[in-house]
Image (tube, rainbow, N blue to C red; front, side, top):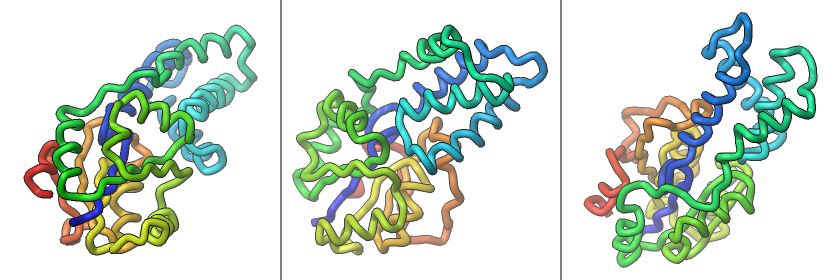
Length: 226
């Protein structure tokens, strides 16, 4: 029996596409007189990289990023009316329901008959647990871990806390930066399931010669491998 540890956002359910849609609306609303959307997106990316180190992840931080981007590009604070407009743009990020990946529930139910299942997700604790509750998937996991960051220290800490055998543990996710690379550094195996809308800040190059990483085309493909 193996321990299968699952990422949540963009592995179990859609997530980043919601943020992408809000960013597209924000760029259209901003209507900067000289910068095109690509240039503004680059500014926003830099702000996101800086803020994530201090404030972490989640919709509240994302809203802060949009506000900081507005102020940087306009060289002034947003007015109260402009802040309300930005908040309205981000109002879609209310996670009272989630869109599951195809056959996720069925796949987890099947895998759970043969393996121990756990969930490891990063972000704001209450928000991530709200998504999990809305998903209806919580009952499939023996334990749920919401962390500020998924790095080597996180994986080593979870190995100790759960008394895991790294060689029999698999991290399953869509993010090379957070799900695959640090898990491998901690001695775990990893399953990489690419997602077409993975957040840019989660991109990283994987070692094609690493035999401890299994790449699968879809979540349902796990049933044929485990």
